[in-house]
Length: 392
Ligand SMILES: *Cc1c(COP(=O)(O)O)cnc(C)c1O
View 1 (cartoon, rainbow, N blue to C red):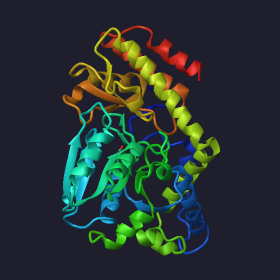
View 2: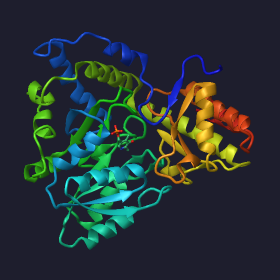
View 3: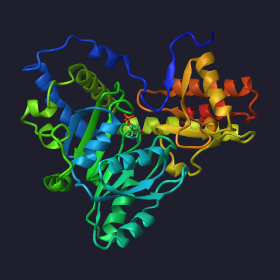
């Protein structure tokens, strides 16, 4: 009954699509041979470069994050090459699984479900690779399952300290447009993302950014297949090669609008907004945890994502709480992922098109749910969150 009204899909992707983006997409298909869609494509590349803080090349695919994973690997690697994958949750495992499926050798280092990767252990693994069989380090910036944020610049420092030539690839599907990320300054050779998280669009577009070192690796890679080849897609002078078929016109109208919104707000302001809203979530969670089982999954604030927060409760309680808020307050929370038992974990997505009233509303819904379900919890959570917002 109380859920009638505008609902909040507070899951970590797909995220809330702004009305502006939906309206921009609500158009008939254009002439795809000339005119607006060709010009619009040309404007997307500089904007995509800006959002990843790189001066290098960008390629757009019709696909999701999994497509970006596959594209990132096949463009620079050959069957039998080895990749090093630090694991901080479900998504690192997923990328490693795609690598394995492509016939690559996968070496993992598991950092558990609540901590970022330790660059010193990456450096040690690279030093141990004396015959340089590792060709790439697959680093997930924010693992959406655990809400752990790792240090991409730290991974670059580990590669440099070991004097190892492997490429550094960063999965920014969850973090791009939410958490600060600077591809060139941090030394990522390849960055990947998708449209439906911080970029505020429907699912359906995948993005790769790659620098000159990665482009050189492409020349040697034997895994690459025609659809996933980034060479034509990143050619600024060849509209047809960009899309390898029909351009996803409506998705591109939406993307243009979303990138306009980020540019209007300013990327550093976007990052700051996410940082403050995340702190409001943490403040509430810490207060709840004073008097009950609720816990932030990541103890170290420096290692917490600003786009998503994973929380733990008693077994079954997280599932019950999710069901309650969805049915009673119109807030849909994310399921537990990559943690056991899954019914003891849930996630709040606060990525993309979110503001203070949405996050405060989600927190108030959780507060009501804890009370309705008689799950013990500390007092003052909403007060603590409001103080963060008030002090912003
Ligand atoms: C969501 C996500 C993916 C997978 O994206 P899909 O679009 O669901 O395929 C990969 N990596 C990270 C970090 C993600 O958050």
